Image (spheres, rainbow, N blue to C red):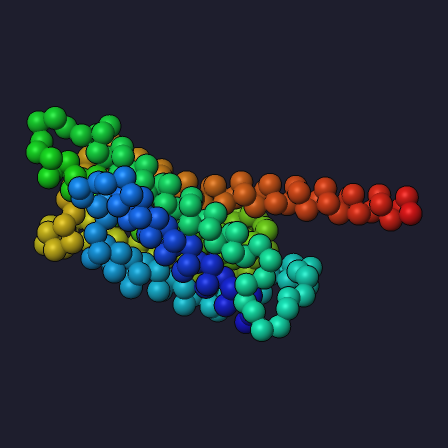
Length: 231
């Protein structure tokens, strides 16, 4: 239960940090228009964050749970957790910013008005921010093991929640009446391809982060063994 509460906190707070960073950076550099609007953040928090978060709360225990060091009572923020939250939030924010900048400067059609270009860039940002957070839910199942490693236990609730949340994102991004309400628009297949690729970036970046952590931990254990043998 304790570990699952940590998973939920990491998942939600990392996503919130990403959303805050997007708006904060936009304000700091003086953008006249935000890369994402409040209604998008509300939808992401209600539809695409809450369902996977609930599913993570019933995630089965990792087979390596007994290898984790004991934690201090009275706190959910063990050593390294705050760092993980910040790093994961930075990865998601970077992907969303990349989507907005590419939509604004690379995919911008000079024959279109500024408002149309901005709306397309904002649509890319919304898709990347929402889908990347869904994929990021997989990262939360373990702080050390790869999401591609077998033996983590099956959680049908998580995959079901991700499927429902993804369906909501696609409906909002593709159905014209919903597009108009949420101030989104149609994208070209190239923009969709880039958006999907950027949505997977945080998942893969966290995988590299975990790999570096595993290598560092392995070297630390070897150094400790050598130190004990030399004593």
